[in-house]
Image (cartoon, rainbow, N blue to C red; front, top):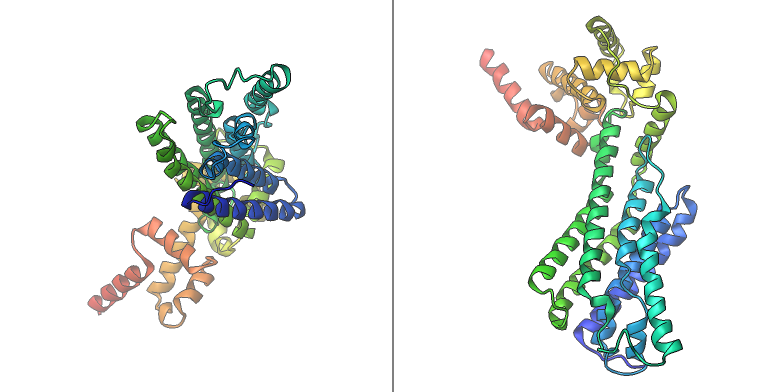
Length: 386
């Protein structure tokens, strides 16, 4: 088999092999999940490998020698219209939100039509005519500007929709659970960030090197793409976040109970103060897995009413409201000198935080200080008074 050994052909081949293996492992692992998000990501990785395959095989000499040249022309590698819908569908499967519209298969219609076009080119040139018409100029039609630009725009649009979906999911979490900072939606944020970097690199090449006759210059972009795709594959395989599943379940429970949080529900100040007093009296905010449905049940009210009371009279969403109380509880302990009795970690856990990093992020967000700075200031003020 023809395969010229060059730096790019070998480097891309190694990356191609590694991503394919990881995509297969993700597909197998996804069989144990209740949803098909793992299979969707596996399909995205496979299409990503096919995307840079023409450059990998091109550097290996397949555009020069027959029958490889014909194979490269008539086999569709770059499924640009399918990449965007796959990303959005994967994000929606990973992070469901209340009243999520059903994903329509029509999103894949452009990809299907383009596949039919490539099939017709093959039938016309090879089966019917046995004489190239579409490829008479010896140019790969996948590199036509109209396809590359429209495919780039398609991916950008779906990437924007995916980012909006994640932000909507985060807002839903903040109104239902008290441990959003612990979740941080880390994996999906990294996934979308890497895709954004890829799109920025693609935009630079479309602006400064729109002509694909500069084949070797575009090779740098495809090498960067392959490396970033491998990074996605590795991170996806290593991703674990059981706590996020608790947040998703809380959103589902809340959807079943109240359909949605109605901001139009009016709650008087006295009722909010009654809820707030019970919260402080029974220290309900110390539960590190506190959710809106659970606390509403303990306060003998419904989730919609409790959420409206918090939003209208505290100035916080549910997550920030609970964490503000935990921070106040911590400050009380510090002022009582309990930092000398308990380690910082012990005090953080006692105040309802599950980890030091979560506590530090929340404390800095609410006070503008690190816990150590606050303790030092408190001790300094106490010493000055005495």
